[in-house]
Length: 517
Image (cartoon, rainbow, N blue to C red):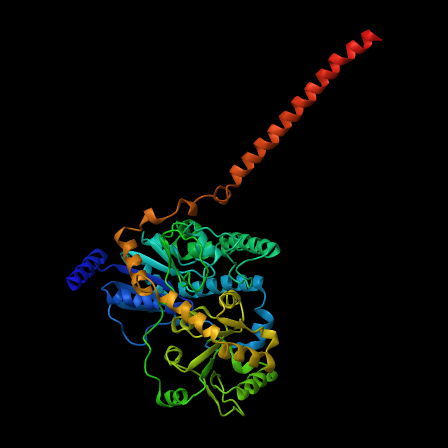
């Protein structure tokens, strides 16, 4: 009976979720694999479900995928993997102001080069699309596709939440407890931290929608989509749905409007068997394994020699074996260290002997660590990585190392703390269990809501009125101003009346005094 009931429920859900094959256009010209992996996973699943997907991307599929068409704009790709010098990161990317404006310039650059290609222009001549999906990054120069095809717009946010991703759907962004993207503040901020956090959030909001999505982005939009295209922000604030690569268990709890959906973990793939040499290396690690990588952008081999030596000497003194992602052959590598240009990260996380993960705090890698329950040592390099690592430190599942204090002693102390203190692993295991405890998987969630938007022609009933209110109305500044005016006017009237009464009393008293005299 239970089996029959479960089958009936599953069949009913399948029927309810059914959508006739839709035509879906995705615009992801930026050449960052960690960014595109979130959208790519969803797009491929939608294609597998019978939808016709066209993706404008600089990261085309290596093998043909049924129902999936790439418009390859790989000429728009920026720096290749592991190309950023360490010194550039240390000196140029530590400024929040500079980081914020850099991502806008990068976004517009990718858009401009993509729009110049004939194959992208040809997409405009196609008859119809039922849905447009874009990335939320530095500027929204691609949202004009939604206007062109009169299609609903879904936007995907690869990193954790940002002020400008919340604002486009009218989601509250309360600076008293919701951190700015680059913040390294604790979850409970003191007065001055809340003050600075509030100032930064106002700056982010004003700058993103008035500068990043300002005249330069609108010029690009008009040049490509035509002079009749509405201002970029008019399209942005009509977004049907936002998918965020986050989850309340690994981020912090905060209010969400119904069209702001968390899908952290959607990029996860099934772990595969490790290569034989790597399998043997990890199997024979009686004291466990430490995995060290600083992601796909930074060229670790350009670290100062003394910093490389600090890591090498620290690793030589720990009983664990170490996997170190390094672009070159490392001279004098300790016998317990295996160096490689690339490692199958998810497959390594799946091995039972992995004890700790040393990382820069990239969002995708951090989600993978939570997925498999691996405690972390974080070395944030730039932007939201500071916030990601600080969040895990607050949860008691990570230790933070400062980029400018990478000494042998500090590295050893962090490793010994995370590996020897069982509390870190136990708390991460609890966090992992909470992360996995969901009514639907990240992929099922994303597919359901994507098809929901298609079924309901944009699902305008999900959209908060707050997204389209003028900022002064959204913040109740007009109401607050009116109340202040009433209070001040009342005080003025009351003061005037009191003065008049006092004058009258004095006036009545004066004649009597004169008469008496």
